[in-house]
Image 1 (cartoon, rainbow, N blue to C red):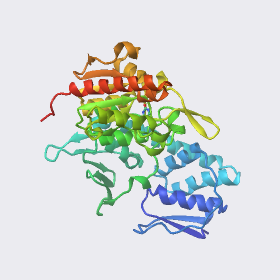
Image 2 (cartoon, rainbow, N blue to C red; image 1 turned 90 degrees about the vertical axis):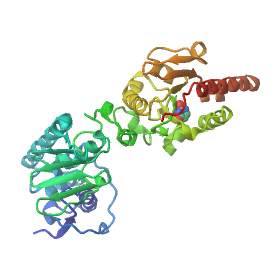
Image 3 (cartoon, helix red, strand yellow; image 1 turned 135 degrees about the vertical axis):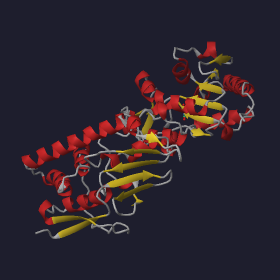
Image 4 (tube, helix red, strand yellow; image 1 turned 180 degrees about the vertical axis):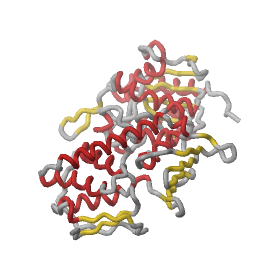
Length: 405
Ligand code: URA
């Protein structure tokens, strides 16, 4: 007979399920002692007593999340059992594990189908321009891919009719409702994580809104750097900027702040921009690679150069920034940016300080990376290099066509 009742706000309330599970499994409460109810409370989470902190392996949590997207009537108990077994060092009964694995496989298959067939499924309405579709889903995978759908459709409104229920992104909020009932807001963050990483199957080249690209890039886990760095540091600035500056990768300070060029190299860059008469607020500043690559030395994090694999992994994000912003002038700060954007090895000394016509009609200017200036040991030489850098920035500014109408 269950002794503890947990109320979830909606059938996909992963946030409350996880909080309750961590607490109850930490107290070794057996799965059969818990009753899970779906009953909208509308209020904040009820406080749960603290349990000893413990780590749940990523694969266990993902399997639990996948099971919660299935339509199994006992999915909350099954998913709890996985965590409980991990915490108590007991085994999940093989028949239950098999049911969970079969359910998770169904969720994964439906996730892959939805992602790869999204543009076949979704049609654009003539009237309001929103996307819409009817989807014959056998799981809750569509709900858990709401974020994917929203980014893939460039934050445009969409509506999805599902068996017995419907979901809608209004352009501002996600709404969900069962047939015969009003739709109510559904928080993206309350949902189980989708069965595939967010960017898997995302066609970055089709996204037309810069904020959608930036939001999607935040969850990018394509390369291992993403697991060590604090966060993705996406570019920032105007989406109609006429000048775009591309550096190598965020440094320690940028990784912590989540913004490009805010550390020592960024401060020197700001000074040089000012000297060249360029207002950073009018430009777009980004990096070739969006995560900080480093090795640890004691408590310090020492910058490591991004390699070809990381540059290639990040290339779709940089390409999307370029495609959406369409800068007139693209300033490549240092060798990594220059060779990534020109698609060949670049010797800075040979290629800097001149206009280069790029394939998309923009004009490129190669110059040194500001951190190079910080490393010049001799003061007089440093002054000369700084002046040369400012001259390159002035050249870039002079190549800017008048503002687009
Ligand atoms: N160096 C870069 O290339 N980019 C930054 O954002 C900071 C330092």
